[in-house]
Amino acid sequence: MTRAFWTALAIVGAVLVETALGYLVPQPGRLFDPFLLVVVYCALAGGETHGMLTGVAAGWVQDALFGGRVLGLAGLSKLALGFAVGLAGGRFLITSAPARALAVLVASLADGLLVPWLASVFGLELAPLAPLALVGRAAVNASVGGVLFALVERRLQGSR
Amino acid sequence: MAQAVSPARRSRLLLGGLVLVHLAVISHQVDGGGGVSLLQHWLLAALSPLQSAVASVVGGASEAWRGYAFHRETYAENRRLGARLRELETQLQARTHRAQEAERLRDLLELRRELPLQTLAAQVVGREGVPWVRTLTLDRGESDGVTLDSPVLSPTGVVGRVFATGPHAARVQVLLDRDGGAGVVVERSRVHGVVSGQVAAPGTGSDDLLLKYVPERADVRVGDLVVTSGLDRIYPKGLVVGRVRFVGKGSGLSQDIRVEPSAGFDRLEEVLVVRRTELPLDTPHSVQ
Image 1 (cartoon, rainbow over the protein chains, first blue to last red):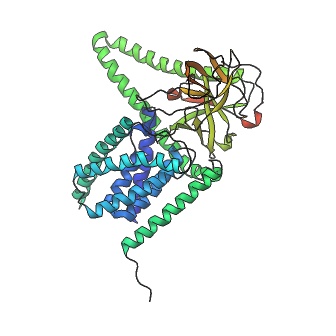
Image 2: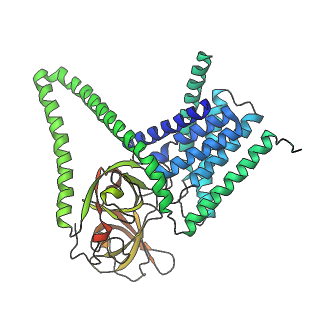
């Protein structure tokens, strides 16, 4: 129950950040994906089931508020990422800040490739991101994610 | 005696189930022409109040931040020019801000007067959050008379059309979206075509619109004004879309034509939504 509450709060936080970014930069989605950070963190902290459920929730909120005409693409992509990251978190030691940042980097790259691919499977046209933009977005996500995860962990350890 | 399902097996079953649900939901939307308005409607109705609240908080914070930044800037000025000048500068900035806002609203009002259509002014409260689409969120919804496919205009040109509505919010597919499009005509030569977006990433391409289906020998020149043709039955005839920036040889029998959109999509703060029920098939004159 507590975990669900904090996850929901994190998704609300992602909405806030995404909306705020919309005021500051013209195309915030090209720069940064706060929903992805929520999914990766929850998957690493709670395992694949928690990761994929968070992925579904975060992806659908992102689809509904910031996505295109067809709902579910970000939901499906983040569901798969939540599961994959959760699975990887259970098998490998992804606890240090650089390892977590690397997990965000890989997840961000996968998300950037997965959504256009899923769209093409359904016969929808989405412009794939240019390689430089894809890597840039992943780097920003990884940098911010690495710092944020370290801060959250430090706070959690302090409260224990 | 039923055997207990292991957690790993349970999570895989859940994954399979959720993937199937997603595939079904997405397929249903695609089969239905790309828009499950009821689903969009419910989700937007449930989530848009949160976004509106966040937008107003962020808007306030943004204003406060701008104010803070401005004061820091003028502080350096004050050091050189004295207290009197600082006061005047502050007043001047505040008035300039108000004047700019008034100018934008005046432009919007003028466009509203010129248009032979019933329109509704709306504020942009959000932008797309994924890199593959170009959308806006407006603070007006069904309760204000906004309906699906309502054209959205700015004082300088066509912005896009409404693709999802909630009670107090609506989402707009911008012309720049790759999935977006409008029937257009080149005003000088009356050559017809269709414009659509490319959604190019900043720094890696252009934000020009593609003018498609123009035959190789059609008379189109750089600088030509492109306006809506009204043939798509969404946008009224004669609204400015942009100017031709590039004409080249395309693949096949069509020309490669790029149009610079006249609406400044990245700077939009207020827009006009045309009420669908009031749409005439022929707008009598070009609105520029």
